[in-house]
Length: 564
Image 1 (cartoon, rainbow, N blue to C red):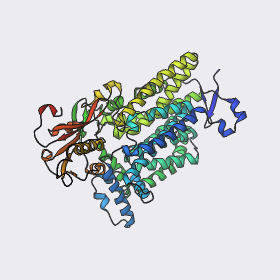
Image 2 (cartoon, rainbow, N blue to C red):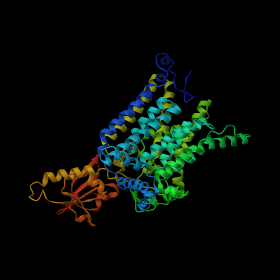
Image 3 (cartoon, rainbow, N blue to C red):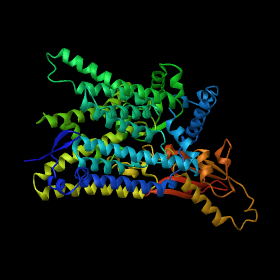
Image 4 (tube, rainbow, N blue to C red):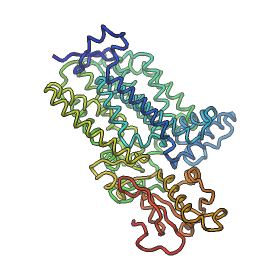
């Protein structure tokens, strides 16, 4: 007979209760199982790794303008709302600036480069989001599911590779995952959830809205949760259902008020008019400016991508083990529940499934604009990891009933997939976000056919190659100490100037890149083919060239010109 253990007051079948440990350990230690210890150890190790490697990651294309936007928000408040420069700064007024405000405030306290600080802060928030995913899986299915969710998420290149310099996407996704955790806790207590859960949901929902207006999805998810937890059977209980729904809404209302307050503090434009958040959401759904993306080798404008653009990117960029586990969990939620506890678990799995499927369905149905792969839908990845943790835990539980050999085999298969992903990420470092799964043949199969190094994160390494080339070939030139070399870059100036160490190298302002001395470019969108030149270096991972360095001085032999 399978024992049950209570998590947050709810019996969850399939998790063995270790009664013997409760006699020899303090109560709070007895509740902390080996999988919990492993999860905490993993998160602690990730903090150490992040602090050791944050300098390996380049400044992303967005960070310069985001940092400036944060400064303008602070100037707006310092001036007593008279400095309104932020409302005309590109289109940044349509975003919240919570992360940027915090990063700038910390930069006055922590004496390091502000962009290094941004990367550390973003990574720590990403690790916090992983902890929220683990806690959510644990809440629903137990400690082992939590550990699997944490490991799966941290070995997802789209997540880990974005954790250092995607300073809108990762904080937003982490806040959404944290809010989802407390939404499930609220749902369990409806119509009278605990005040602490309401407060934490409001805080994290506000953090999400303080970064991106699409955090309004959480308001819809609250409705989903209330609907899923309505008393059953529904027939003949109209008054009871209405009473439950009204009480639940009133009880959750303080969380929504708190979230709104945090949103307007971090997003001043939202405070100018009550409907501005809705206007912002509509503006994003109609975005159409000169950004291009690539899918199956064809280049699209962001407003013209196919309906299945986002589902395709999720299918090819998320590790197969996560997709398998998440799919298995979603299917299992459709089976008839055997106990009240499994019925509750199914409701929570259904809620998580809706959190994944609803925004994807909206994107497909209304064919909204999209670009740079799945970056704007990165907030779905932690939820997929939670679903995967639950599903893979169910698999192991089923194998346990078949004996030690069966569960050992299952663990071996799972470990093989995880080890493969871990090895791939190590080999990709620090470009883990270039990970593609085997459905498209990995990075090699994705090259030139899907979005790759869209931030030109390989720029610092390309510059290192160029500087090494010059140190090797130019010192014999008498003018070397005072010579200036112009460098055309298919990327952002801030990232170039932060990475370059030779004073002879200067960012080229010329309209025509071909008139420069050197050219560096990623293979993203075939930017490397825009200028012909003698290839003097490449940046490669897994045998795939992701950036070229070209010498534009003198003749260019045809065989050294980069292929499109």
